[in-house]
Image 1 (tube, helix red, strand yellow):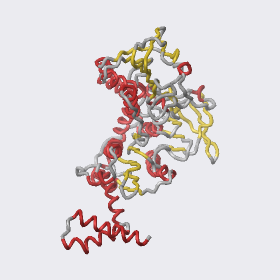
Image 2 (tube, one colour; image 1 turned 90 degrees about the horizontal axis):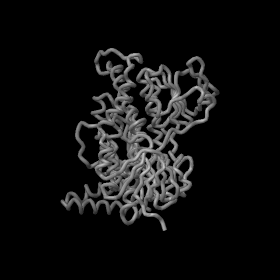
Image 3 (tube, helix red, strand yellow; image 1 turned 180 degrees about the horizontal axis):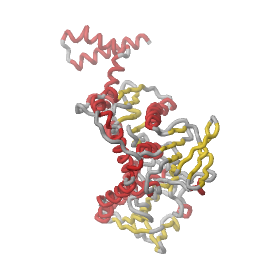
Image 4 (cartoon, helix red, strand yellow; image 1 turned 90 degrees about the vertical axis):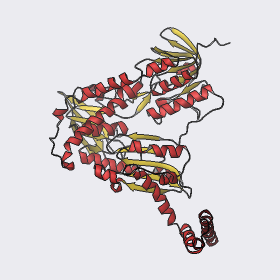
Length: 504
């Protein structure tokens, strides 16, 4: 017979997933212990989202000053030497957010006990924490991820930066090589370039941001190159050598090998789950170097041990970690099971312009063999974007069938991450593209680009032969007799549909 549990749930990890699951479960009155071995707040607060966005903000200020002439303002330009205080401001931003964050107090107010230290499973119901044995009925694994290591000759000897050390820099380097063209790589490439650094961005594949829509990533690549980032696609970092403080990087591509000189190397080549030292083998939890395996209900191979957040190895974003944490607590606390909706793949990359992603890309829709249509609205036709000088990019909506079902939305443009939310709500609630088309949007706003993209669905449908014929029949034969609008439209559509079917 198993010993009585000390807690209803023990949570391993104090990042986004752990904090949300702790507060939610504690508010339900469950006995909760959260264990964190580092700092509360996790990667996003301490070495990820917060410092990177602070750096991006500083870079945008510098870019605004250097491009003020485009707005008719004569302003002195700024150089790398003028950026001496930027990294101090970035580190200060972390402290400010920590001071404003009431997470620890919120957890304690909801009855969550917090302990610091290394914990390890002894069996599927027992943990050992710094010599203390703890038991629980359920466990939530939320230990997050770390930068993935890479094997490149000379790199370890030369030294390199990751997101965990990048923001410890005391000054902006004159030359920076970035390995990896994912969200972190492209964000930092643009930011450091705008801060006066010569940036070389090395990407193994044929394009940047490979999980985003290729039409839009091509636009971003052109903008980065236009701002001065040396983007190397289909390239690998072959070797690194450091002599007298200068790093020589050999970059291999189809055309041969090139040599680039730099002062620092930043590796942004993906993430690996933090599973070391947890004793998952003793608990019977199935995992590998890329992920902890879970079912649709986010249960591991041991039914009372759940996992959420970066450990799952797929969409490693704080907002999705929070979403998954809520599902886990619901499944532990209440009857029945809720599954994670994998259609809701959504994120934003905070370049300038921003890149926002929801649902399936056009490439994925094609691969799935679905019939679809694409609705596009360029920001060059949006009044607010024009007057703000941000008229780059477009809204791209992928829909299906006569219903206008939304399969995916991809926005490359100003404030794209903010503009995505009405589409998220529509998709979550099962609304068609017509909901966005018919919704009143404030003028002049960037969000009207979303409305105008959605309205192109009506434009496309009105050109389909049977619908066009139905509308003509209504206008010519039914409307003059003042039939009720609903009845008239129904009859018109019926006439056109009948004719279309007869032709088939």
